[in-house]
Length: 135
Image (tube, rainbow, N blue to C red; front, side, top):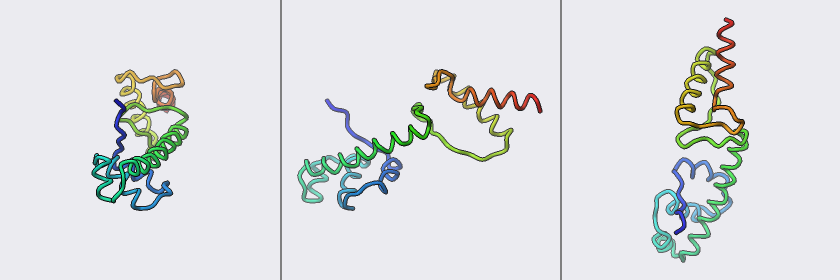
């Protein structure tokens, strides 16, 4: 059995501006992907066949794949473990050093190894500790 395509509401909203389909097709795809409605139910609502709903879902899903690949490229090709996200922050140096250390510890506890061969966050945490040791 094929795995059902699902998206969170925030994932869908991130992809929405990238879609070049009618508002009706966007709404139908959202009902199927986010609200977990069957293609039959969505099709009945819009007077479409299940195939037409499948086509709308396919357009959104394809764009979602492009979106995820673009995010991965921005992260240097590193796929993050489930429940993790990447962020750019501005904060005092000491606070960032503590955060990097906590992130490295959480990654180690989860057994996550970054694609560069080091533990996630390890390089930044070590550099931060060296900088702070010289303060």
